Length: 200
Image 1 (spheres, rainbow, N blue to C red):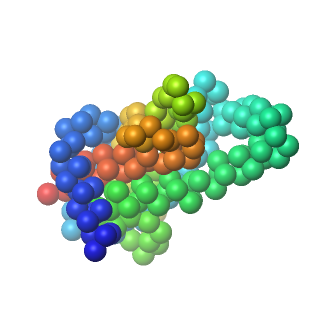
Image 2 (tube, rainbow, N blue to C red; image 1 turned 120 degrees about the vertical axis):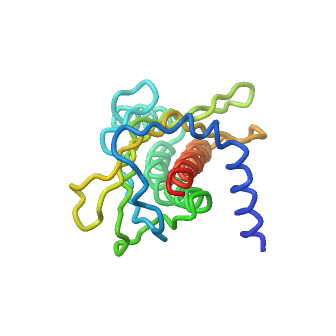
Image 3 (cartoon, rainbow, N blue to C red; image 1 turned 90 degrees about the horizontal axis):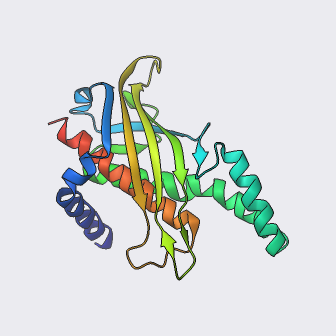
């Protein structure tokens, strides 16, 4: 019951913010009409080549933050770096798939038998921050390619999701993973709304 209520709230919220969400979506090539009638889509996530904040590479960002945290407390930086990667499968991907599925009506996740695959590549991540007296939302930019699962060289559409933002409404988002997770939730909602609108 609780899950159904959450789902209805997400769909209602997506309907209210449909226009704002659509502004985040840029179709670069192709069309998504072929997804009409499909029940599921295989979804893969790629993070290679991602920039983070002011850092051109993720490796530079991780090295800097790991060193800073380890100076404050031995091992803290190493644990933070592990959590940074683990949050992808533990937080970001599940919430993206959940929101996308709720809004689009197209089940998203590991589905190798699905006719189409959605490759979600993160181009850049702004982690944001929250130090109590001051905070800034996270945001992400994504490139989404929809391809044939049987032959991924056959691209159906390429879409950009621009500056999907994340942060707690009440300001208690001190955890980096929480803030970024909310950005993936917004991205999934926006993309789901776009797919639903263009597959009627």
